[in-house]
Image 1 (tube, rainbow, N blue to C red):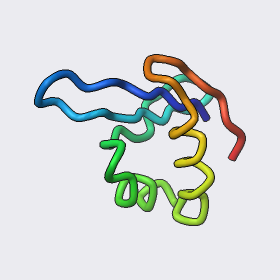
Image 2 (cartoon, rainbow, N blue to C red):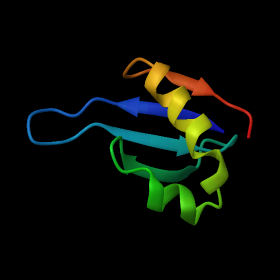
Image 3 (cartoon, rainbow, N blue to C red):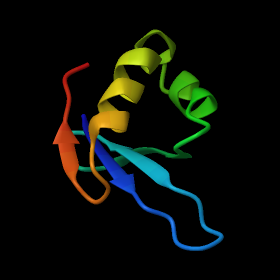
Length: 67
Protein backbone atom coordinates (compact mmCIF):
# COMPACT_ATOMS: atom_id res chain seq x y z
CA UNK A 1 0.00 0.00 0.00
CA UNK A 2 1.20 3.51 -0.79
CA UNK A 3 0.50 6.76 1.07
CA UNK A 4 0.54 10.17 -0.61
CA UNK A 5 0.09 13.33 1.45
CA UNK A 6 -1.34 16.25 -0.55
CA UNK A 7 -1.07 19.86 0.66
CA UNK A 8 -4.25 21.87 0.35
CA UNK A 9 -4.33 25.42 -0.97
CA UNK A 10 -6.35 28.26 0.59
CA UNK A 11 -9.80 26.83 1.39
CA UNK A 12 -8.93 23.31 0.24
CA UNK A 13 -7.76 21.18 3.22
CA UNK A 14 -4.83 18.75 3.31
CA UNK A 15 -5.67 15.27 1.99
CA UNK A 16 -4.23 11.77 2.02
CA UNK A 17 -4.44 9.17 -0.72
CA UNK A 18 -4.08 5.45 -0.07
CA UNK A 19 -3.24 3.37 -3.13
CA UNK A 20 -2.65 -0.34 -3.67
CA UNK A 21 0.38 -1.96 -5.34
CA UNK A 22 -1.13 -1.34 -8.80
CA UNK A 23 -1.54 2.31 -7.74
CA UNK A 24 -5.35 2.11 -7.76
CA UNK A 25 -6.94 4.66 -5.44
CA UNK A 26 -8.32 2.92 -2.32
CA UNK A 27 -9.13 5.92 -0.15
CA UNK A 28 -8.99 9.71 -0.30
CA UNK A 29 -9.60 11.52 2.98
CA UNK A 30 -8.91 14.71 4.85
CA UNK A 31 -5.86 14.57 7.04
CA UNK A 32 -7.92 15.43 10.12
CA UNK A 33 -10.74 12.89 9.39
CA UNK A 34 -9.33 9.46 8.50
CA UNK A 35 -11.71 7.28 10.53
CA UNK A 36 -14.61 6.59 8.13
CA UNK A 37 -12.42 5.95 5.08
CA UNK A 38 -10.13 3.57 6.92
CA UNK A 39 -13.09 1.78 8.53
CA UNK A 40 -14.57 1.14 5.06
CA UNK A 41 -11.29 -0.53 4.05
CA UNK A 42 -11.29 -2.67 7.21
CA UNK A 43 -8.22 -0.94 8.62
CA UNK A 44 -9.70 0.29 11.91
CA UNK A 45 -7.07 -1.53 13.95
CA UNK A 46 -4.27 -0.02 11.80
CA UNK A 47 -5.35 3.64 12.18
CA UNK A 48 -2.62 4.56 14.75
CA UNK A 49 0.10 3.00 12.56
CA UNK A 50 -1.15 4.61 9.34
CA UNK A 51 -1.55 8.02 10.97
CA UNK A 52 1.97 7.87 12.44
CA UNK A 53 3.31 7.18 8.94
CA UNK A 54 1.25 10.04 7.50
CA UNK A 55 2.38 12.51 10.17
CA UNK A 56 6.06 11.74 9.44
CA UNK A 57 5.63 12.03 5.67
CA UNK A 58 6.39 15.35 3.94
CA UNK A 59 3.75 16.73 1.58
CA UNK A 60 4.01 15.53 -2.01
CA UNK A 61 6.03 12.40 -1.30
CA UNK A 62 4.97 8.79 -1.76
CA UNK A 63 5.71 6.18 0.88
CA UNK A 64 5.19 2.43 0.67
CA UNK A 65 3.90 0.74 3.82
CA UNK A 66 3.18 -2.91 4.57
CA UNK A 67 -0.18 -3.71 6.10
